[in-house]
Image 1 (cartoon, rainbow over the protein chains, first blue to last red):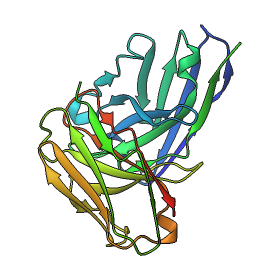
Image 2: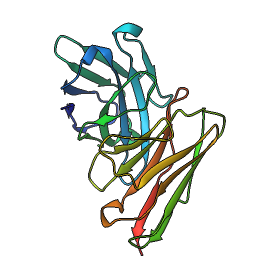
Image 3: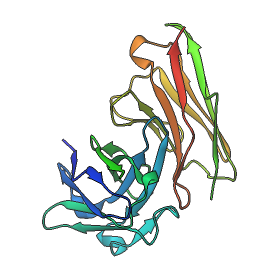
Image 4: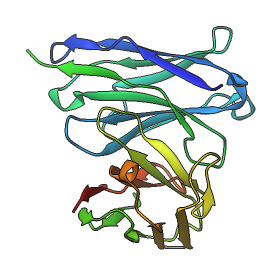
Length: 120
Length: 107
């Protein structure tokens, strides 16, 4: 069974940093892309970024709203994915989901999400 | 960026009704589109991939169609568990973009 479990959310002040983790199991981790998607309270879904698989050299893509502030990385030895978030803004407040994506398709499995609140 | 315009933003329907939700892409995306269902407090769940392929385990009352710029999600006979918010997602080019969502409510 595919499982994705996010952790690391919490309350942080504007300008601060936070690192989210996503633990994956039940599938060949290095073969899949992983996307981060977020949802602000009461709002729709927003794609944050992607890290590709081994075959595509683990390259990354980011939404313009987070580029230069957020970094996605992965540790394939631990089947884990990370979202390093720096220079956080109040508008980054959201539930953050990690998702599994087969190359060429849309995200097919989602974690339960972790809430990040940016507030003073 | 490719804009995904989803309509309607909300609808009220009764159990047994046929429901249709539309997504229009600002440029052609071939069939690089997925449909998702989200219930309050839960993660989204994929219903349809590649515009018209039913995700394993999803009831056959859900169907998707379209290609290029116009896409449709149809629920042939609405069930009580289908009341939720639905989103389309294009993955043709970066950034990936979602429609703004359609909330399906009980009439």
